Image (cartoon, rainbow, N blue to C red):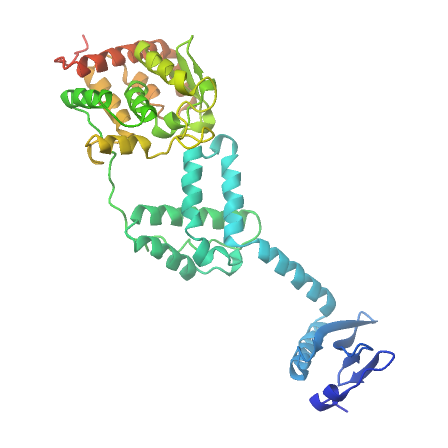
Length: 408
């Protein structure tokens, strides 16, 4: 006879456990404590086994019967319901650790230590920040449950604020996280693969840079007269002489600079091209670096944060200094010192273009050619570094500088 809710509710505890049978192997096990446990008896491969469905009344009679029928379907298909239940628990635990945020953090950690392809510190920090913008909308979802619409909705929140480039880059990073999940066997395919073209394309803008000789002199004099924070002034004074990428200047460490050899060696992990970059230092650059060393040396960051010496100065520090002097972002930026050097060094006609490219640490796809030019142009780069600093001094003094014409 099938069970009823009344019969189960009225069942009293006894000194020993006893069963209340329903049908098709389902029964309630009444405990001496008064607890009532759902159990299913079934046979698989000739062996009798039992499967628990929870407690009554948390699991109702009708729910218990539905679970019984589902289990019997598994048995009919040759599957063991107990084993499938264990697998479901394992999958649930795996899914709990396979949220988008968890895998994004794992991916970023991998990219930070990814050998020759490792992210530079600035790239890593920026990428981690952009991915964190997805924490609230999709971060807690299991990665295999995320649909293209979920990602697009999350990215559109960034786009709607007018941050078109950030939205584009965040979508790229999200796609990288999904593809990493595919590569590590936690996802079948990247849900963002069909979202290309869904976002508004940002207008391409170039870094503001002063490249006219007369205006360069004005800028250098303005920097010399800067009345803001001392570290900022020194960083702005050094930047035009070395014209490295802003992130490389901010993350410079005293252990990388050999004052006696007049050489700054930037490790591969800090460069965009993931290769060590050697910067010859002119007399003027050395003098400025020695001034900085009196304040922040002899170890740690050359330009530490004003809040703590364990971190480099903010990526906005030099740009903020330029704004304070009245230069708008479309006029001059920290990155603009590179364009300044590239333009004027090429225009003067005195130096081989490959030497200038090597000084700017631009990549060369031909590894043999790259290795050759590193050696072939080093002495020329040393001479060019000193000529460039002398040229900057002349511009600062307001000298009239004429283009240098290479002889035939």
